[in-house]
Image (cartoon, rainbow, N blue to C red; front, top):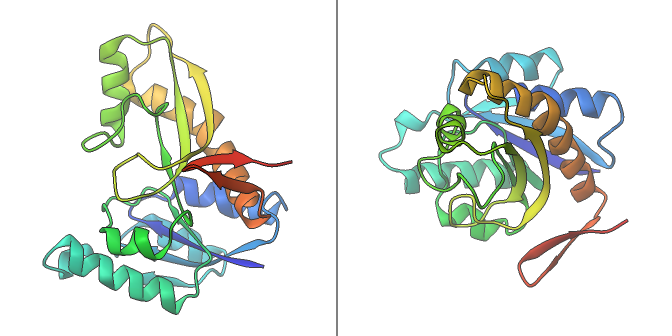
Length: 208
């Protein structure tokens, strides 16, 4: 049984999707062993407590820069014996000391179809605003491994939705969450825990 540590900063809707999937038996061979928040007021902490999942708070503001903060996160991950780390609305970019310690063991959700609308500065509603400004007809979400570059790790799963003429960033965000993120993130986590993801030449392949 693999230990899944989830990093959060806000409301925790993706965390809830993972909790629900675990409770329904969708996630196999893995358990959410700890939730770590960068924000002491994150509602995600309440979601974890409601499901008897241990929590830790490591406030970003208490560290002078991202390197010191990343080292604190790394210490916590090591203490929790993390097998898989999931970034679920975690609003801090981690230093390479974390990604190098956990290669192909950190998963993130990006609310667009990488390599479009990704990289530094593309997060949250800003992604959906950019999608609508450009006028693309299809958007979606990408589940990918995390490396030292923003949104540049190996892609595990992707899913798409139609962009409608009267969409607002908020409406598009909700459609992508409900139809892609909340379904594919638990699936990717289960694939990892079942050892069904193979890395070849820095690309992720899902095995049956």
